Length: 115
Image (cartoon, rainbow, N blue to C red; front, side, top):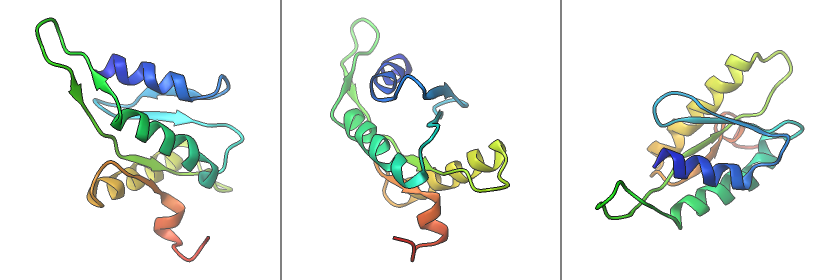
């Protein structure tokens, strides 16, 4: 399933972007020259692609469907890469606790009045 997930991820990111596995079932995608808000578009596209897909299982197994929860965080002046990843992780857990199969933006969680 992770191989199918990674293949679909590669199909929606740009050549300049980087994606890598970050733990068991978590992935990190770095989108250079993209604000947190602008990242909502490919994140939502990817979330929908996964929700609409079936993933083959080992021989004899039935294909399965899946959903994902996505957390987005943009770089803020003074942030380290660890800060950005931590913020994205917090947003991902907010998406999960909000009902799963969602995209959550860290900036919207911490500053909901920002359009």
